[in-house]
Length: 116
Length: 112
Image 1 (cartoon, each protein chain N blue to C red):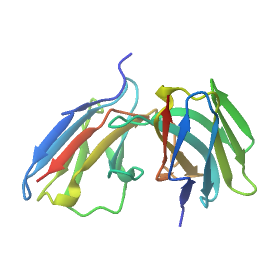
Image 2: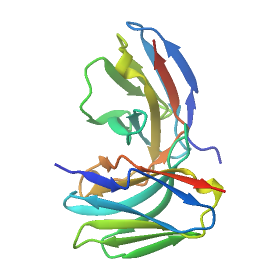
Image 3: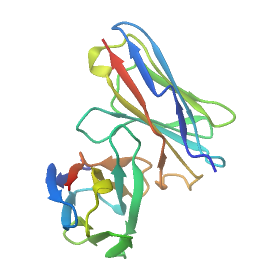
Image 4: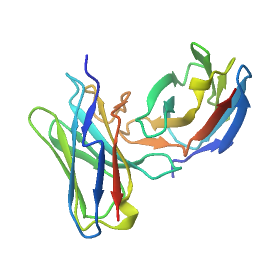
């Protein structure tokens, strides 16, 4: 079985540009979460989507947005890139769960974004 | 505020030796605690998961312990191998909360 896949693996952008990152969850998983991981730190929660609805949002500015498609894949968009947005962006998928319970999340390999 | 703190920040051990990583948390009400292994530039991979009623869980050479009363967990690596070089992240979830609380991780370097 394929695990969580993310594309692209690496990306270089300049300040002010926009970027779209993509994630395909494990087959059968309906929940997708996005995390930002700055070098040397643990992942920071950005968004979680369940059944195409936003379930939660972390403490990130409105420049960050996401959506989930009918096939449960997801995109993370970041506008007006700043140098501080340089990080590893992780996508994680999980099985359907009762409302409000955290399932084991399976992480993708991440997209390394560098903003120059 | 739910927080997870890990120590040490990093450590270096010789191949074949054992080491123990620590995790303290303030997440409440507690649901479960996971240890993940993250190789450089890769996504985290789950090693163990423990609920309130479990105080130890093993996965090969990795053994995790949990003391829910003191809100502490440890990850013990036995007979380390070069492939154990990675960051180990403690992740705690609260009941009725979809969000996870991540520690900053402990970077383990195993040297021959």
